[in-house]
Length: 112
Length: 114
Image 1 (cartoon, rainbow over the protein chains, first blue to last red):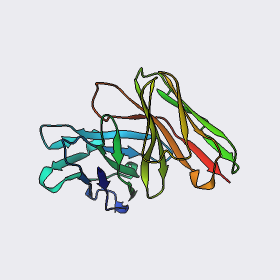
Image 2: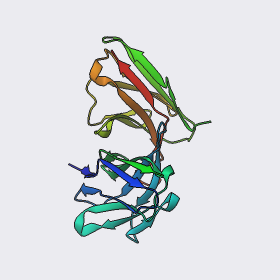
Image 3: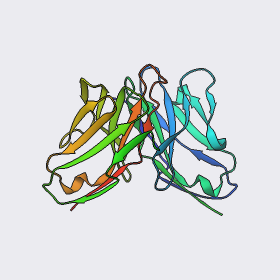
Image 4: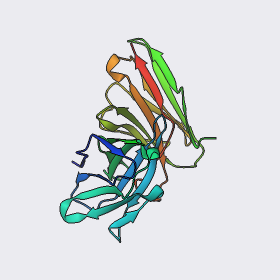
C-alpha cells in the first residue's frame, strides 16, 4: 500500500533561516507528488507538484522541492523563511486515480 | 465566494445524534472527496465519488455514509456520532482528466462530539 512519511513533526525557525522538510513515500509505480500548505484557520492549498520532467520543481512563495527517485524522497525547501510561512505542511502522493495519500504533516513556526 | 463550500463550519453535538455535513462546489468538477484531519494523523480519506452514480469507500469509512445528490453536492453523514469522530472535516474536488491528484479544498467543518 502507498504511504507517505514526514519525519519532522514540528519545526521552529527564526526568520531568514533556511528550511528543509523531509518527505519519503512508498509507492512502486509512477508517482505524482504534492506539497500542500495549511495556514492557521484556513483550508489546504497546493504549494507545488511534481508529475514528470525536471525533478526540481518550484512553487509559490519561493518554495521548491526536489524529487529524488532513488531515495523515494520529495523534500521541500526554502532558502529564507518568513514569519508568514508559519503553517502546517503536508506531503502527498497519488494513491490511485485522483486519490491522494497524505503524510501526517509538519507544523512550522517561524519567529521574527 | 468560495468555490468549495462546506456547511456547517462548526458543530457541537452529543453522542448518538445524527449529523450531516454538506459540501457544494461551483468548480464544475466531477470528483469529490471527504477527508478528516486529526492532529498528528494528517488527512485521511473517508469516501470519494467520481460521478453522481459512483461512491467509493476510503481508508476510514466505518461509521460514515455519503450521498452524491448532484454533480455539485456531496454530503457526509454520521448516523450515530461518537466522540472519536471529533475532528476537522474537509471536502475536496478534482477535475477528471486534469492534473492527476490536484485537489481543491473547502474551508473545513469542525465537528465536536460530546
